[in-house]
Length: 420
Image 1 (cartoon, one colour):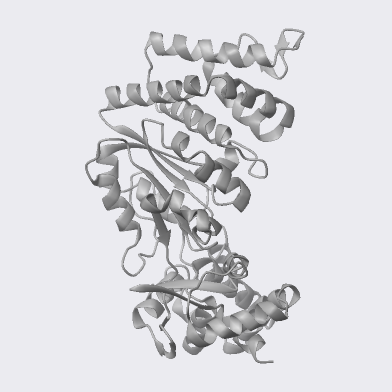
Image 2: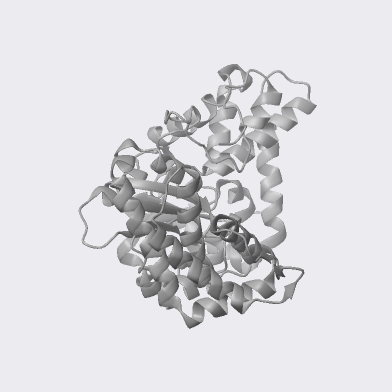
């Protein structure tokens, strides 16, 4: 648990903290919902929860994606705290950032992270594994150490020769993350015996299931950060291997993979977290009351209503495009602007300044062809495959929505830019 206090703001200083851009909303230790959590229209994460609770022959695997800043990390934490999920599964949530280098990520790194975190989290929770499994794990540990041995003063290139399994798995994740040479050597060990690593993962999962009466559920965050090339290598080229662990897994994946023709590799197990719809398909003047109410609640749970003018709030919601992180971004900039004005309340002028700041960022990176594409999509809201569209979606210059059929529109701050 983080040390962040989820306290509703009564002044701009606290409000600025509450709109931190990268703040996944943890649940309390007693499982109570986070006071800042807002349920989305249609409760799309419920679709994933229902799928996990369905009967299965083989442990389920799902691929979870969405636009940058749409709240995937928060939804995974919310899913992990779901009582029905905890009744059926022994959940483990972690970020791949903690276990590997996301700039140089490989399917072997992900598998090793799954096995290591299952082992370490179960031990940390007080779980005991049988001697025969510890012996199996110790044998695999020996293979890794033998591969990277350069003995100097009783050390094996960063590993203590006599270190126990707990220290070994903790050190291995650190070395995989920070040291390219050891990362390469460990990958070679896995290459020579991929079935051995899968066997270890499955043995740990089987023992947890046996002792707890629940199947491990691994929720891996930040797997959407690697490049499209790396995502294809892991989830397309090695799909069958990534489906092998005998535990339930939710992999986050890059939205770019969803906009790729190679998406077929994971289509049957995929869930895309939509943005909050703020207007009707093709009718921008027809506002979605449900969408605006959702975004208002996102603000009101974080700060007192008196800190922002009502019209300014509606404008901030419009400029957010229904993306929670963009809403936080608009609010933070508006708060700073109002504070510099020594105002007691955020007003329209502060929100307009925030929108101008965001628009200026896009002005630097969008070329004429980008603007032509954005202008066309703004006029028809049609989501069509185009190699130029994928990076625009990743930049959030384009935002996808769901109203029965999927559709998209430009980021609202860009509307002025399109017709300059």
